[in-house]
Length: 397
Image (tube, rainbow, N blue to C red; front, top):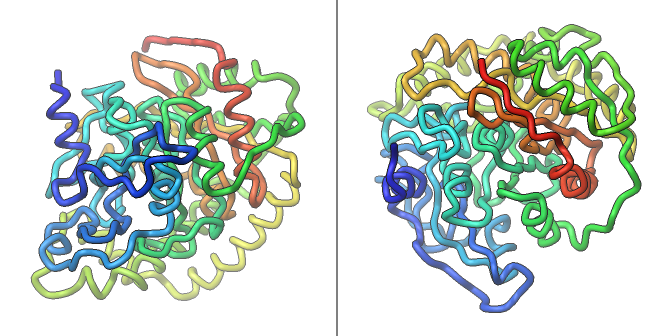
């Protein structure tokens, strides 16, 4: 349906480097990578998915630390990748620069906002790609495109030189086609990753009731096939409590960082982003203050539950990727339902990894694992152990 040239064009921005290598030798010298166009690379602009930003921005003076680390490990940077406008999106749809292709399901969206990064890796243009994750921006495209994707523990990796969208949620992460590559990249940031003792798996049984029936029916047996695990109820406070905590915090963060920029007279914004920034300007201060307290209570409960060896098992998204021509109403409904799953790690500032698990109606569907604070290495080790052990299940609707 799409040629390799078209997939590449819609994955990579034109204003990034086509080839950048700082060292010829190093632990990643055999790997190529891409970086999301929220991340600075010295000498090049970061457009953030917006034409005004592309026009007005000066070339970056320094490379973001998250990008510099793999460069200094010998990895070859082959470009910067498209993103949803100012990272405000779950689907990868950008009316200014186009929507990257999902190579695993070309009729469907690739997921966002790390859309170009996921497309580039899934298409085989590079071995791994860097992205950011606020409310699911690595985890969702990883699930949609059949990739391994890690959202790191909040605050563990530097976000300097990266556009701030919601600073109390923003994290760095990366995507790869296999768990071994994902772990090799992790060692550049965390040091050598030793083999861990078997994790204490905790199946969030009620989380598997959120996806549509076909997705839940495919993922639950796959999760249970991983071995002994304790089944528990995650949403003891109710799903809406989690969402009502996430929404005001994330929106107020957005208003604090990008509100003035977005409200500049004459600013060119897509209708969806303009509406989201307007919504962020109207956050009720009382709801925000109450959400701050609830967030800490939810975090304390989950961190105590996980400890140092616990891993929560849950679906990554609630349904297959929307079709590329899906109406806005369908996108809004999809976002709210999947956000019930992705907001958990985001609110509690925890690491989460997506692993390709099953195929439904020809589309990849991911299974997720959440660990306690700084449990990134545990998740990378777990992904390497079980990624190939998941059953190959395929369902047709």
